[in-house]
Image 1 (spheres, rainbow, N blue to C red):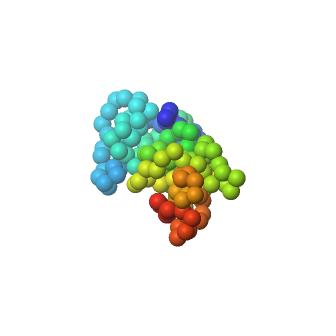
Image 2 (image 1 turned 60 degrees about the horizontal axis):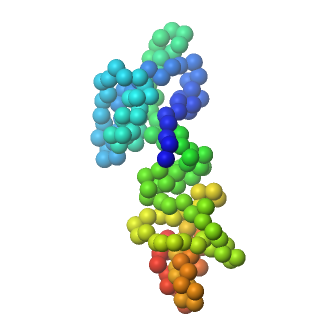
Image 3 (image 1 turned 90 degrees about the vertical axis):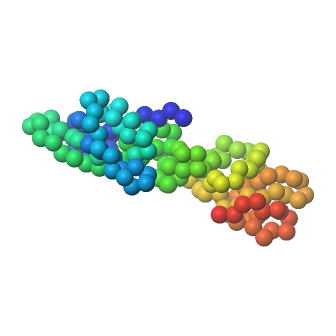
Length: 166
């Protein structure tokens, strides 16, 4: 998935500042890492993200007087990819990390169930187009079809073997 760094959110807060670099970042396990690098700001942000940054503190310089400001951003605020337009930030995050699978491109049954080819345990399922989470996945006893639904319709349904319920 193509991702790029986007400082639009930074300029929404401080429109007359330029991003001078990364001061430091917080990792997934809560550790704070200071950054001492002469690389450009975008390279520093990308490096921090590659190292597992969840929050990134940027050094911003006022273009008029050169005065420094420091602002901290969630990594997802600085990252742009195909999931950036989602309002559900947790869904976007799970899709980016592979913790969720988007079913929006899957064929639908007349009842509106998503047709699946396989089932993967340990991940979440969603329709990123509608930003709806999948609530149940089941196999039809009658047809053998593997289906997913945004409701819990397959849970305790005698016509289906429920493989997964949210």
